[in-house]
Length: 316
Image (cartoon, rainbow, N blue to C red):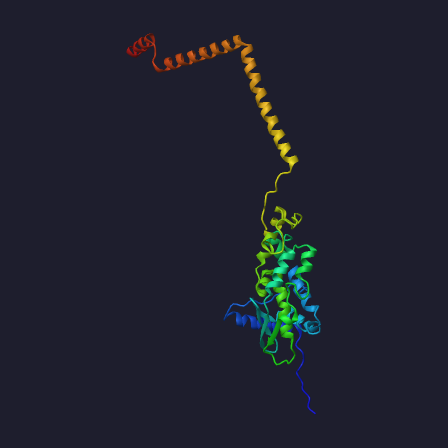
């Protein structure tokens, strides 16, 4: 009878320190995309949580996925790359392991069905990627079997670790890492399944089987300026309400009326008092004459003053 001793299990701090040291060393050789989780929740957005919920509802994965939660929380997924039909990762354990997850592309018919069922219900790309969808659209996208998220039969798992289990903790950590990544980049889900998310926003007439104009307009989910400002950190001037517009127009009209009244009063005063206006004109003309005489006197003295000055000079 033989006994195997694998040594003490490393603590959380030791796992994180080892992963960060490995990440720093690998980061010098090539660009890495580690999974960094802040807080206790692995995913918080609609797309991230929907990915994790889809994995956990299948009995094939439910018993094995929890093994990877501590790994992804401790930043052991030092690199995660999502491409069309494939997820690759490097996870730090007792060594550095390479994980490859192959995801079958979404069937064309299944994608057309999703687009037809959701047609006319999604108004913008921002709304789609932000997860601001109606309950009907959420249920349709997340539906097991023929929804956007892959079932276990569409997923193939592979890890370079010596664990003989079909889903080891390194694979489980990678799957949870995908959910965390979708929090920040939800468009990667459409890349992974090989579909174009823009087709979900097109008009109903684009898809066969849906008559043009039959889809009801969804006006309650259109993003306003306040939503865009909070989303992009922009200062957007809000449009004036009808009451504000009426108040501004009334104030402008009152100011114009007051100005017209002042002009009319000044004109009437001038017309009703012609004598006063004539006196003011004569006074102004007399003032100008006095000023011109004063300037002449300062420039050239009179003949009598010049003779007087000559007598004084000869006497001296």
